[in-house]
Image (cartoon, rainbow, N blue to C red; front, side, top):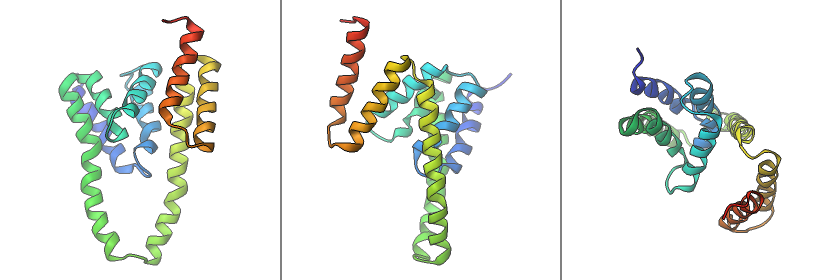
Length: 176
């Protein structure tokens, strides 16, 4: 019989170590583990947890906390959070020391240059996964694409876009 706390630790600790480009880059792999491999959440539950994690203050990787909570309650939230943030914290402590010592070295510039496209690809993969997992059909996809375009082209407050998106769905579904 599997131990859910151990399962959370073995899922999130390795993801923590290979995350390149911030928490966004780990979303695709977290989704694969949570939805496809362990079946801890459905696609819709994952997208909802992702949205909630993005609306809360603090690091966007609080998604792990929500997943841990769903899988094993309070201790699941603690284990998933520590598993995602702990290894990276220790790793970055060591890397920061080496990084500052060899500032401007050719290997360092090459490493930074090589990791940028990997980080961009991982973030694009996360976007693709979330876009495909959205409920709401073509309306949700249209709202997401339009919101992205507006955010990229203007300096509009994202809260206004959230309100507009909510207004669109309320008017379409007659919820009041």
